[in-house]
Length: 190
Image (cartoon, rainbow, N blue to C red; front, side):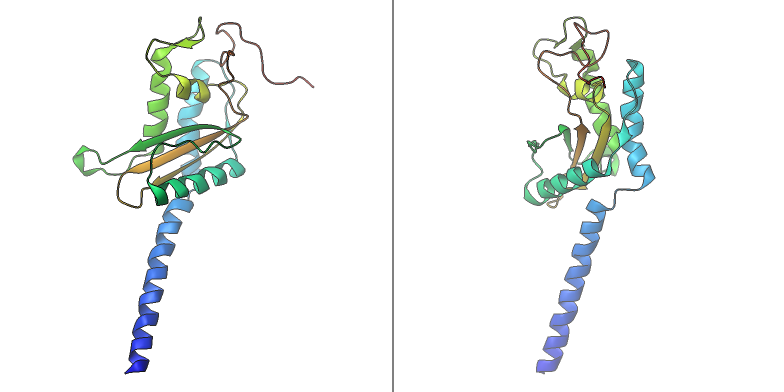
């Protein structure tokens, strides 16, 4: 009898580990080229519209984003910035109509780029009572590298998406790209 209980306990433990492993895999198996392209393509399309160089994918930034996203998913999935060394955009979406529960990279980037309509390039400011900082980070000329992650919240409460940028943008008082306000490059000439 004791032997069958030990076998049953072992089986349950193995099944629990397999389930946890699959959740871990879902959150962390995002280095595929399709995942990279899903984030890079809409970022680079927005950047091309204003004449800014393309971003490149960076594994260090992606790892940072994955770790922070996993932490948010395990805690509460609230929109809380990491306060880390990189520029950052975060997104959260809950269940949508039509039976689609997951949100994709394109949804997050589209929400950030949509803020373009609230950005006054000449005055280098957001329209009154509007947000535009996510957009200006996407198109920040001095930013060269990108890494992002998307995770499903553990409580079934939606999708948390984060993109990390290096060097970070949104330097107070500076416009994001040439042609806006009094633009001065934040990249040192060597």
